[in-house]
Length: 217
Length: 217
Image (cartoon, rainbow over the protein chains, first blue to last red):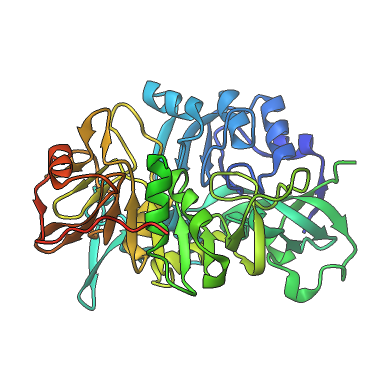
């Protein structure tokens, strides 16, 4: 852990054109203050890897509205008409991935695997252009790993060494993404002394986290 | 009783004691209302909770606990929160007893299309491809027709959700079981005749000698 950043410092660290994994599911568990700072900086050309793009005005939806995003890799954009509109007009290049495949591709990227074999997507549009592998008589799609320049993580508690815990459905993609970003920035809701988070409650070990966002004050 | 309530009530009868069940957004989510607590069923929301409960009392909602549509929920005793990798491991790995999804089309081979209308609506598949591929039992809950056009068709013209044949289709007119020999008409909705169903169905149906009316509790 290299220390705490203000949202503005975090946004400066992330250059235009960077690839970002952003945790959250319909903006639940999404690091909102980091997104606000990226919008305020006027970030451009970002690739966003996330489950969804939330709704306009919430979570990743704010980056979409601000024109900060050039490419989206997600499982669902149906609740954000702006993302759909920008995909149809060609402003945003959008790759739709089955949700279970998306999380496994991120896991593969973060855990040093060369890909994953999944039956989801066989005989659908998702199969197009992909290698089909037969194992013990069953067919699977070979899905390749995903990594990103940055993983932006929304957490519940962090301690001074960067250990993270999450609450209920706000964990979603966050723990997996914390493995797959080259630089990991976590935005916790509170920062507590080392020892307050019991070891068994640490879902993301601090060794994975490069920076915490300072508390909201 | 309106069409959606009829469908939800009939689907609820498919749920067995102790099952882990995933309900899709919209009509399928209504099924939970008609499943008695005494069955000991756990509902999964793929964003990360096993043991989904009803919406909390006014003012008691928490933004860390939502369903897959982003709506506030509670959790029942015995609930567990999980990350997206575990959530889809349960789905793909055969640990989910049943999934109930909405549909755009089901065809004579029992294939489901429910995630895309090319050129018009591209919401993304979300978890649907994983759910249809991996759940032990797949039930489609949908209106029999949309804008006068049958949704039960000889062959899906919309992009498929999965290769897997769905197990049961429950509509406002009928219960239909896709099998290796075609779509078997199992039940009629109250007051609906075989002729009504035949007239409203574009696909060929296999009609047994006895097609009873649905019995709704």
